[in-house]
Image (cartoon, rainbow, N blue to C red; front, side, top):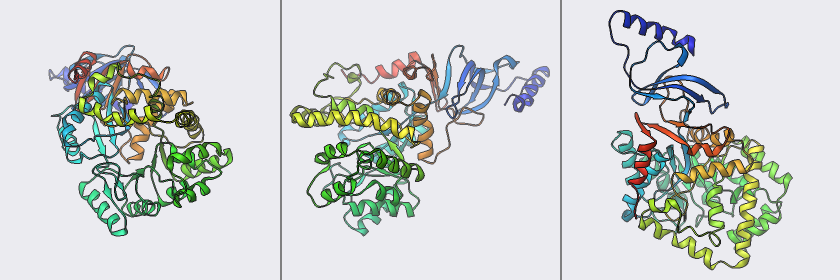
Length: 469
């Protein structure tokens, strides 16, 4: 890299000697340590030059002869990495909650999250408007990749879903999503039949559309991955694929002899290491990502014990979205003792499963599942909690960070985020090394997004501008 940039440095010196001004950069970050998330290598004492929203060049700070930048940042003792990705969020709740959802965008930037994957909702028109405004730099927020409305069966649980019950419906739903130019297809499992679920995946695959979803318990993991799904959201479904009774459980659900929640005890009790290994191998061989969402799982499993009404982040959430929390809160309060125990056992099983998936080379995606209806799972901060949960599950800090931006880009078939000349400058400058302690992802000095820098005081202002109470 240093050799490649030598001609540039010589050119700068020649321009200076002739009395001409050196190239004008927008931002220069000096003496910083750069973290390469592909291999964990840390390169110290670097100067990074940014023009607009692009990294122009990188040189060793010791070799720097001159620097002309509108904004000079001293990165001494600090660590520069690509911005974080939250690979599972939701913007939803109907038109009355559009503005409250829009305010959530600031929470992501304030937490160093420069890209999010919207996993389905009923505000597609608004979300696509935000996408354009963020790209045009007239709105502060992360890059948004969206599925648009979910695909489900007749009488779908979530508002705005595309309901399918036959082949024609499936084709029309996919036509609609292609016309919307969505980034991927999200399939939900509340009402869709197993047969139609597999057909949606297969037909989307023919159209070269990326797919992710929940998985009805009326199909197996092998059937789902064979059909071509690209990511499985949440661990309920992968856990079923680790059961020695998976086929029998599937048939019981298909015959209406059991349901999703009533099957989970049996799923946990019949976990088989040998079956799990076979399932992991299939996920890996078929390049299927898994989205663990550990933090929300733990939060919801302990709603009966933890009082969240004084949470620091609750003041950033609008009253309308807070009202949507009631459903899960009431369910927790009214749950039977047996269900409460099962839910907590499931939470422990998921932590173990996430670590085992990583150990077996299955690709994971860090996602918070934050948004309306998902009680006390706050946009922005919850992604940091998810990274911490992944480390507790057994991943190294580097592996946890890779599940965010690196794996997120691979799943969506986007350019891999890197800190190299010519790369997009979505950057996170930290005061301490996240490879040493994953909690250091919250020790933010500055965020760079769309050619703008947000230093710590400005990030605090973003948070304060969303306070509702």
